[in-house]
Every structure is written in structure tokens, then in C-alpha cells.
Image 1 (tube, rainbow, N blue to C red):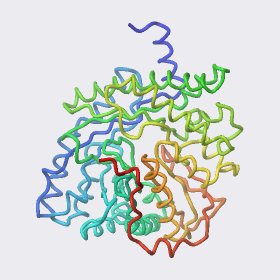
Image 2 (cartoon, rainbow, N blue to C red; image 1 turned 45 degrees about the vertical axis):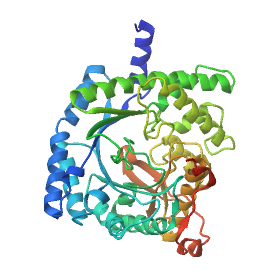
Image 3 (cartoon, helix red, strand yellow; image 1 turned 135 degrees about the horizontal axis):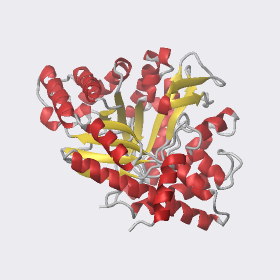
Image 4 (tube, rainbow, N blue to C red; image 1 turned 90 degrees about the vertical axis):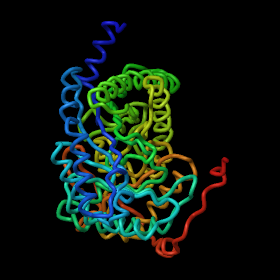
Length: 449
């Protein structure tokens, strides 16, 4: 039975410490929508999504009202469209159907305009990837991702080279909106099939027909808990573990309720601390509360490793199904502490890359000068993929080349996407390396059979 003090503590987390359910994401299997007709496939996709997700927003709002906690986003992820459109080649038609379905159901975003090409690309998959920039520029709610590497397969450098071009073109086509198209695209290594967070969510091929995945948040809650202790780093870790447990229990409750109300399988609770641009909701501020003068200082990577590990250890006992990315996110534009550190010159892209070795994802929502060559973007993706492949973890790149802007400027997206200062990136050319193509072999420890 809950004690009065625990109830009061939870209410305080919700009321003043920015605790929320960041997203309820419904995963929908689209394999039964496949046909050899572009129009028929797109119509089936629209019909199935609107039928399954018609009550998703209403359900999220009802749960929020019942328990007094904000359910910030309601989203849908679908089977990778590169697979669904392969028979008909109707990728644009499916993308438009996805966008129309998202608007009809009132959800925030729909993810799954995706491809899995970690080991090689078919001709159809290459054609699909080339459609991504125009799709992101011509739709409002569609998000896209490409998995270019895995520990098992190595790094597909042909895909890495192509994705660098895709990011540049997506940014160019949406240059009047600060390159928003690139902000809706993620390049992955070791992508997971049950991620509830955008822009990288897709419904994996091993998933059930209709699944509810929930992402919780609460970096502000963790910071407030740390403010009350003055012990060593072991005590810091224990404090984070206990707090993560409490946060995740809320996610477990919401996931079970949403699954029951929507007649869907309960997928996972993602434990990730996902920040926002709001003051008091920053992962960077959690790291600084541990004792750093500023995120970006020496010790930042160690502090982040402690945080990520403690969040996982505390949260995993609080839910029957844990998955997604689960840990701590470090998106620059979506974290007020990261933004401030970049503005002051305390945080650079090289330090962010080091931090990705121990965080949940990777180089996330980072803006770079618009004249950055596409091969440099590809090389950044290759670096992140290497970190993921060698360390057997998920890494990703969501980078925004800001056309017409340079270091000292910033891009403004508003809302959860926030503001991103333009960071300096090395101008040394990796063109010859990237142009070689081929595949970087999987590491020795991938051979586990």
C-alpha cells in the first residue's frame, strides 16, 4: 500500500519537477497492407492506421486526466515502409497516406518511413532512401530513419555515403524552415524495434500486430532528488536508481492502462530521461548537480555513464517489460542545459561524440553549418556507427545542416524541438575514405554462435 508521503512525493514530481509521460506510441504492423498496386497499398495503410489509432489521442488524454499526469505526445510507429512499398514501388503514395492518417487521428508524429540496410541495399531500398528528402519536405508529421550498421553485420559504408546526401538534401529542401526536414530523420546503428521516441521509431518485424510502447521522462525529478544529498558518487548512483524506479512505475501504470483501453499488446516501457527546452527539465543540469561546473567539462562522460547505468538499474525492476533505448538522452536543441553550454563554448561536437559512447543514443539534434560537405556528414555517421558497433549499443545521428547559417548562429524550431546553436565541425576532408564504399566488417566479438 502506498504511504501518504509517497503519494505527496509523486504529486510533487508531477506538479513542480516536470515529471510526465513523454509519449504513448502505438506500433502497427502493416504487412497485411501490401499489394502490387500503389493506390491499393496506400489506401490499406491509411485505413488500418486510422482504424487502430482512432482512439489513441482520446485514450492518452483520459489517462492523463485520471491520474493527473501529462501524457505529452501520442504517436504511431509502423512497419518499415521500405518493406511495405517494395512490391508496388509506391513509396510517395504510402508517405502521403501516413501523413493523412496522422492528421486524421490527431497524433503528433508517425514514424517508420524507414529502411534496414546494415549489411546491404537492394535496388528498391536504394530507391526508397532517395525518396526520403522529398517526403520529409512535403509531409508534416512523417518521420524517417535508416539503420546503416549493426554489431552483427558491421557498417554498410555505401548506405552511410548515401545517407549523408539524404540529410543534406532534406535540410536544403526545408531551408526556409531552418532545415526541419533533417530534424525528422535519424541514421542508426543497432536500431531497436520497440523505440517509442521520434524521429527514430518504427514497428519491428518481430512485433505483434498492435502494440503500446510508453516513454517516460523526468530529468527534473532526478535533479531535485540529487539536490537533497551530499554523499559520495555511490550515494549519487543509489539516489538515481531509487528515483528511476519511482518514475518507471508511473510508466508501467500508464502502459498497462493504455494497452487495455486500446485492446493492444503491452510492449515496453522506455526508461529514458528525455529532456525538453523548459527550465528544470535538463539532463545537462543533472550532470552539473553531480558536481560539474558545466556539461562539457572533463568528467562529463563519466558522470553521464553513472547516470545512464543507474537509470537502467533502477527502472528495470519497476516494469515487467523494459525496452526501447532506456537511459539518458543528450539532444542539444531539446535540453536547455545543453543549449546554454554550447552557447558558452563549453560543449563541442567532439565532446558530444565521446558522450555518445555511454548515453542512450548519439549525436542528437545538433545543428552544423549549412555548407558542411555531405561526405563530412557521412563521416560523422560512420564515427557514431563505429561507437555503436564496437560497444554493442544503439547509436544514432540526427544532425541539421543549417543552410545560410554558420557558427554563432542558431536554428529555431520551437516546442519540444527547441533551439540549436550552430556547432563547429571539422573541415578536414574524409572524401576519399567515404568514397571507397563497401562494408566495414563486424568486430570479432560479434561472432557469438
